[in-house]
Image (tube, rainbow, N blue to C red; front, top):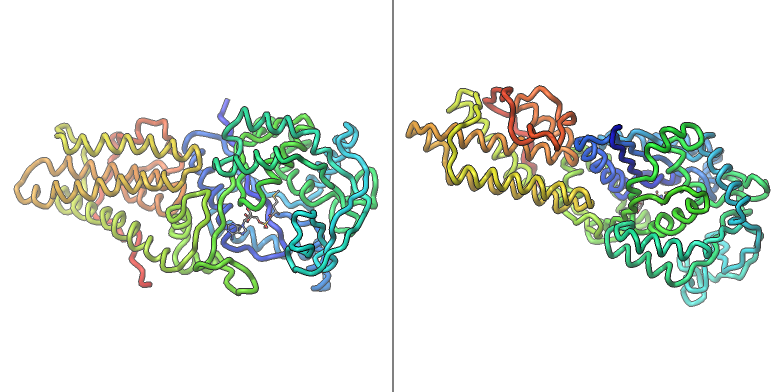
Length: 508
Ligand code: MSP
């Protein structure tokens, strides 16, 4: 049986256009999906849009259209962006689809019948302009934490989920799976939140209409998060295709930003426990991007459009930058100068120059023909030993989403090669008629090919370009890490005489 791997992004709200934050989570999931595919897994990669709720209802009303019409217009903004970013998702869920509404009604009913959803009164501090409830501790000097206007105590009928009942089971889950929440700082945050005590959760609203009606009471709409989280089971065929569902569930990794971790690491597993469905294996929360040192916001007018960034710098350059610049899991700052520096430094100088220099030498000195050498000395073995070690380290880092360290491993290979080419000086060997030139150029080319493969999850198109330039028939995505060929090429070594600049320098 094939090994299965299931990864998800959050489903995005459609009341706003996609920005760099949305792009970040989705590219991060794409990196893992591509990595797992070259590791031989059958990957299901799900993304989608979160289309219900009061904000969408309001935005549509302002434009004088139906909420569904607004959703239909906005959804392509997201799917077009995913295409521009070379996202390889295998599924896309819209919460307005009938298959999803069916799932939500079904699970709400089931949990209700079990006694874990009950009707009660919801009472808390309400901000009328924001139409949002806040707990006492969330208030800022008694006022709304968002708009700072006064709040009032309000009471409304609501269905509640018995979250308090799941406190012990959640703590046990965390205790037994130290990597349930990643990275570690987030694990500690979630653990202390649960230990602080869980209140039952309101899972229905009566104040707006745009959503899925509660099956046993049409006056209530299912709370957006109960609705949205269920997309993760809809997307792989829950109810419709239980065979596929069982092949991919439990989910291997839910990815999201730190702001929505609690919904994924506390509420979602409890809903699943109430349904007797296994919780996901890992929940990974990444950090937030600021823009040139400032919080990104519409009012500051500094919201970064990923489409524009891709047009200016290139899609693979953008994808690479996001994970090379900032450790995945921490907050980071997006600046144009930083992208330019990465492109000119890592990509054009260190990697691109090495590739074109060695290609030119292979063309000039070896007439384009690469051969596997039979004599090697200590310097060659040093290169090979390090490359093998770094391939292993890279794999370990990828497994735990340490993308930043995985990229450091690749650039260590490149730096070793740059030193090797300088110290072995193939141009001198050529002049002296020394046969060692074949060994040296073979080693460089072979290691560059490996570096291209390791970069593939991050820069799929550019890596493929390098790979093709090496003259290997098999597409990169078809190669497997567990294949010894990753290290040693077979007989199809190919001919190389030049390679067009893959990463041109840019002015900035
Ligand atoms: N609809 C909910 C998710 C439901 S999942 C069952 C939602 N949507 S969202 O559109 O607001 O945002 C989704 C993702 O974008 C989150 O992972 C969030 O962390 C991420 N980002 C939004 N702004 C961001 C930054 N400035 N930086 C990095 N990521 C940020 O929440």
